[in-house]
Image (cartoon, rainbow, N blue to C red; front, side, top):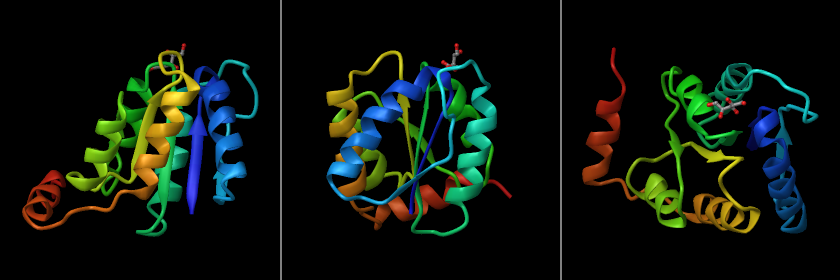
Length: 142
Ligand code: RB5
């Protein structure tokens, strides 16, 4: 399942992505927020991390104003590899090389067209494995 989560600063971009996903008949679950009223990005980052970690096939999209705060909250969770991406290439490499399970976007910096292209790339790109497998394993600390 694909989970979406944002604070108020990501609310509008999240709505644009929801429209794209609905048109493409891609199933998703929106974990909030549900309005542009101010809220706290860590709440939505932690909520998203918990849902993504329920199944290895799950993916997430986290959005706040810059993408910075929500990525910090997400990446506190072992097993979450949240990639704050600013380009389609970032989105692609985050999957191919880093096996990212969450795409993080800046709601106040990205236009909907670019963000949509990034999401599409993120969802359709597989992890390459091989030499990247060892490196990705080393991200986790015990
Ligand atoms: C909210 O104003 C803003 O600080 C938040 O969305 C995010 O950009 C924090 O990293």
